[in-house]
Amino acid sequence: MPDLEKTLQDLQEQGLLRQRRLLESAQGPEVTIDGRTMLAFCSNDYLGLAAHPAVTEAMTDAAAIHGVGAGASHMVCGHHDLHHQLEQALAAHTGREAALLFSTGYMANLGVISALAGRNDVVLEDRLNHASLIDGARIAGARLKRYAHADHNSLEEALNTGQRHALVATDGVFSMDGDLAPLDGIAALCHDHGVPLMVDDAHGIGVLGQMGAGITEIRQMSSKEVPILVGTLGKALGVSGAFVAGSRVLIDYLIQKARTYIYTTAMPPALAAATLKSLNICRDEYWRRERLAKLVAWFRDEAGALGYDLMPSWTPIQPLVTGSCESAMAVSAALARRDILVPAIRPPTVPEGSARLRFTFSASHTDEHMEQLLEALAAARSETGIL
Image (cartoon, rainbow, N blue to C red; front, side):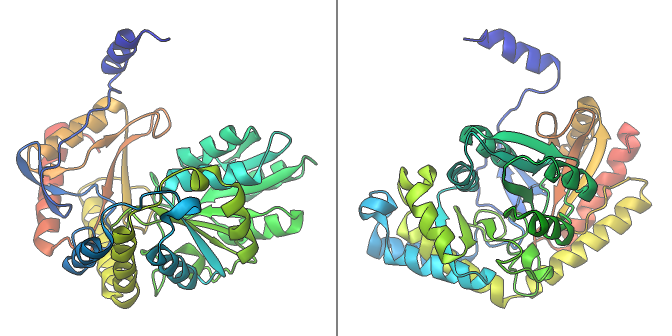
């Protein structure tokens, strides 16, 4: 057993000790954190649906009828008709034959990879993939090989080794950089080598595309090119849970083999009802994605004019890399003093030397919110001298 106190002390000295903030309000652009009212530019509630009245009403109405718990796993007696309706709706939304619900995105990725890969397999993953994809390969006992971020040549070299490759896995939108995976090239390589492609589109579902179906919509890629599509429900859709979409055969196989699906309690039926409502709003109210695009362009123009160097991203994830943990925390603190909440993101969440502020935007942010953020950024630059 590690020396717990020494480990915590070391993290504190390195500026890497994580601390939780206490949220005392509903999720939204304006939140109460540790007793303070602040503007939040750090949530994944991209479409502003987490506290949407219609979504809340759908959940409370369903809870009054169906209760607040599923009571059992899907395989015992917890698979409700509302779960079935949601799976069908998610399959239709993503243009796939079928979908399967999971309790979290983490459990979805662990369940899928451990069901499809084993000890004699190699799983190829982008170097900047989410931790859940990396852990999925490790738990499966497969050999994990990581190719250079978004690098076709690096992936091709890895595929040409003659080893038995179970699958290639990549984020769709990378959660800390905000850039998109080059899916066209990756899918072509996977097709040429006969290796299935798995895309975790946690930050693309709801955000990208005319209908909000994510990266496969804007790339016009069917289940032939991307046979395994993972999405989460707790980001743009504003609720909780995750799903895997693909062929009927894939979903039937996962029902039998994905341990994180089989051996856990199903999500509450009322939550499935809320998600159905959220999905309808996501599909029908395209203005929310238009609003996000406007906010991102505005922020990039004005932050650039202030001298800040943002990473190349046109998604609602806008990273400002400062380098050291100390500098990221200094800018974050300067913003917090002006009631702007943007926590510093530090290793191991991001690579060493790339600590950053990860600005994220919601369709619910107003013009006044943006003006307050930009004023605070100008003051923070003057105060800290950090770009």
